Image (cartoon, rainbow, N blue to C red; front, side, top):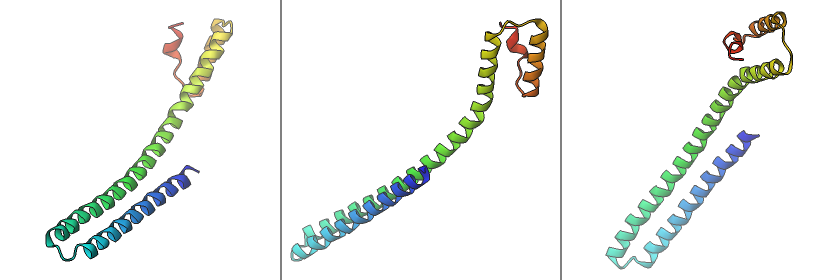
Length: 129
């Protein structure tokens, strides 16, 4: 679902940039038509409108790049967060179980074996209790 919203955002900014460029070109043409007899305002207007058009195009390109980079960043963080949550949730469940029960040495040893089989290193943590 987030991919479609990002695709919509990219389409929106590309459309907005294209409309702004078209509006700027229309203003440039009207400026040329109104000032065709005066050389200095005509030349300055054409140069300034050229800079404005280039700025709008560059801004649109940077916005689309930023959206794509944010998409890559979010997908990387989601992948890393998922990988980090799994063992920490398992450890949190183990710690809650450990704190709720009255443990004997034998049951603590069995619990440590369970931790070993689930690939959680609990040996250093039990000494802190």
